[in-house]
Image (cartoon, rainbow, N blue to C red):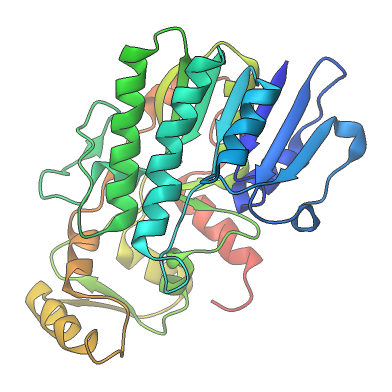
Length: 317
């Protein structure tokens, strides 16, 4: 069996590759735009690494040449910047995913595994209670990550109809925490005061990184198919996060936060605008019933335990 892993130099990709222990009958092809020096590879693991840009033709030529049986698509952009504008992020996230799915069908790939995000549900007033996999995926246009993930979900839904022979596994994690994981959530933890929106708990669902890796591996080597939310049991509110951090919690009226951010962002004081308020008010809370019933692996930690374990590994929060 031949397995292709994209985004191999990312946090999740590195953990996945480090955990693989395949035999002679399996060959793994790993790729990322970053050089191999960013990844520790054991030659005995039958892993071939190639630094390629997923947006360039030579990447697709390489994929067509190796003809993988399973594709694990982890390449994704978490944050945009001057060096990574939204247009480029869209090319990597959405355009490249569509091209790779189409190529997978063309070369008779057997299974396509992809990680999306709970952000694909979007941040909307109707996000009440626990959201199952059937809840509509309608990302927010003003938040690139949410919009891109929702469009990727639509691409996969379309591919399911167009290419019925191509098996799919969509893993939709909540906020991933784990060793060496970084992102916007860490910025929240580092604040001296945890600010929330009055009247809205802003619950998070956390999933441990090693659990995500375990689910990807199970999807790679078993016949499981379908789309699955990934989250530990339970949720953690903004107030609970503050208590866990031993920091004060300050809930402010939504209108006050929106007004302040509408002034501070144009001045360059913060990168966040008033649209950030809905990310607390209407945060999607992922139900994990389906994956617990279908996969052999079970979440190692609850959401609260994942937070505590992550904080135990940090020195600057």
